[in-house]
Length: 75
Image 1 (tube, rainbow, N blue to C red):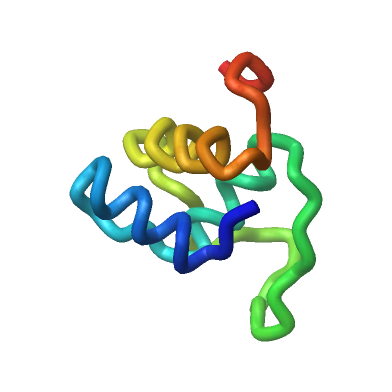
Image 2 (image 1 turned 60 degrees about the vertical axis):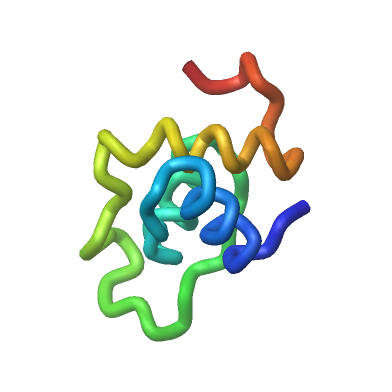
């Protein structure tokens, strides 16, 4: 299992951008991975910076690469 830093490095090398940690957390949540709420989050029911749709597939690829999800789990 990769850390947020390892996921950021993987995405940077493979896709050419560094995802924000909040995007990684949102992508994990969209893929069904349980995550803890950040203690500094203003509203625990609303994401202020959700993962952009055009970045989700790169993050999904990283989650597959690091073994968080299987390849066919999320379409």
